[in-house]
Amino acid sequence: MSPPVHIPPQPAANPGQPHWHILGAGAMGCLWASIMQQHAPSQRTTLILRDRQAVTDYPGAIELQQADGSMLRTRFPATCPDELIVTGTGIDNLLVTCKAADVVSGLSLLKSNLAPSTRIVLLQNGLRTHLQARELLPDFSLYAISLKHGAWLRRAYRAVHAGIGECWLGALTSRARKDPGIVDHLPSRTMNIHWQAQILPRLWRKFAINCAINGLTVIYDCRNGQLLDRRDAQQHLRSVCAEIENLLTNLPQAYPAPDLLAEVTQVLQLTAANISSTLQDVRRGRQTEIAEFNGYLCELAESVGLPCPLNRSIFEQVTAQLSC
Ligand SMILES: NC(=O)C1=CN([C@@H]2O[C@H](COP(=O)(O)OP(=O)(O)OC[C@H]3O[C@@H](n4cnc5c(N)ncnc54)[C@H](OP(=O)(O)O)[C@@H]3O)[C@@H](O)[C@H]2O)C=CC1
Ligand SMILES: CC(C)(CO)C(=O)C(=O)O
Image (cartoon, rainbow, N blue to C red):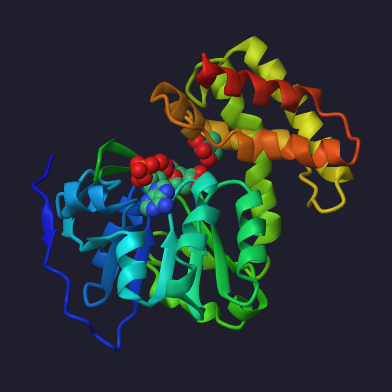
């Protein structure tokens, strides 16, 4: 492995340069912080960790193994919501990289540090969080990124950029729609970020893909590609995709997902060696995002009387894994 490349310490406050705060320094937070600082060394990036104890334990730097195997070691200052609230620090740009279940509570905590002009970018999988955040902050500059990059943590603050993909960035509120220039303040080349005028259809499509894949990888306890190798899993996948397609065609607020099985098959081939995020969470005994995938789909379906037995069964089986 090559020796780490050290990025110099952060510059002092520079009014001409954006200052990004990153909420949640897990796999995605470490990846984006490192790439953002590499992309624009004169900008400042501050990590927002969960609490004061996390700030005390933080080693002062993040190491990222990049997709080409090279290592990047970058120093970042860290803070936590408590400190930001007590000091009344204003946040100009916020990248939200915690899990979906933590987004609304995290944004609510930081509300006094945010102004309508604050650019807030969500990059969670799922959909519910985006809709809830939009309800919480309707007049703010709120964006969403749908991404095909993969990252995981070797241990705390040691991330691996496992799969290079693309990202689509779009507005969730009308204020954000007026500022597509945000893409220039993000590492658009390294992360392959494209501005997407209509982000919701893309979020729905990714949601459908996560509903089809993630839970099944837990049920069959396998890497993504193995869902295509096992006859029982393949048959299950086919039926689940058909149920999701039917639900999304009939749910009033949804965007239909035509040819879902074909796209899911392609994703499984491209990510064959990956362990899905949900299976990784189950193996580590961590809360999964299954409630945001099949759980949310069932809530939507059942609220209008649409049957969803396969998705309900996936939701229940995955949830049961963590409670036993
Ligand atoms: N990893 C991947 O390859 C991909 C991830 N995504 C999406 O990105 C999101 C993040 O995923 P990932 O990085 O893997 O998740 P991780 O669990 O690795 O990271 C989440 C981090 O957020 C922290 N956190 C939670 N709440 C707060 C809070 N209130 N204040 C500060 N920090 C907080 C967690 O801290 P603690 O450890 O204390 O809980 C944890 O460090 C998910 O929604 C996922 O679906 C999308 C595509 C790919
Ligand atoms: C598309 C997929 C399944 C790739 O692993 C993913 O997004 C995840 O693991 O959450």
